[in-house]
Amino acid sequence: MQGVRPTQIQRKLVVNPNHPSFAPPTDPAAALTSARRFSMMDTLIQGLCNLFEVDSGTGEVLPKSRTSLDPAVLASSSHSTGCCCLNILTTAPPAGPWTIHVSGSLGAQNRAGRDMILNPTDAPVEFGAFTASGRPAFQGAVPTAGHELCGHAALEEIRAHPEDLATPPDTALENRHSRPYRTNRELNLFGTRRARQKFTRTRRPRTASGGIR
Image 1 (cartoon, rainbow, N blue to C red):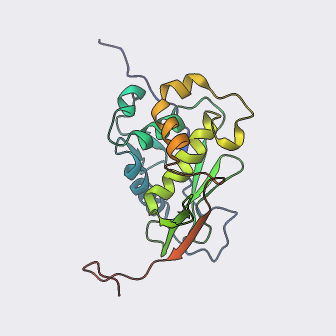
Image 2 (image 1 turned 30 degrees about the horizontal axis):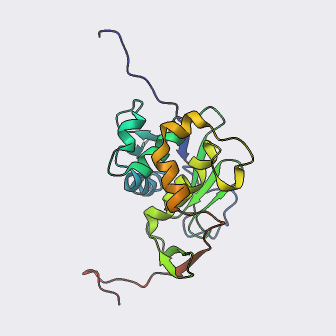
Image 3 (image 1 turned 180 degrees about the horizontal axis):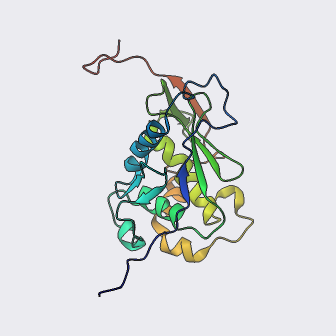
């Protein structure tokens, strides 16, 4: 109808355009421009759900449509876990924004104060975790981002993180996003600190054809 605006989302997830103050000055990512930080994190965000992107001007993680998305549609999409967890983080109740900081020397992690660290997409390090049987499993940059965003931040947002279950979960949000909730809790797709021990390895350089040198 004429004069009716689409519902606007609350902006709750943003990429820090600058080198984080808690990272060392010798950090390989210290020289990255704001545009490069936004571009690298956009690659990870769209890898989790191509309905979201990092705004190239502000660093905010937003739906490409710039309007609220239907959780039921997201839950039935091909990237349901990533889409639903990003939807949780960008439409969460007002408890302050989540901030993604880019660092090349600090490992991917969630920090106190609604901060998380993700690594540059060109970092020469691969992240992984030990499975329940003790086997190493390298997961790549996008699943590593999913571990932090979906396996920690989104579950903390709805008070369903295993380390925070002393607080009753937000059942309204849990019901709206039941598929990613079940995926993280039952299959441990992106893992938790209790279930998996993270590890890293340095990537070997690859030739232009993709072979390992």
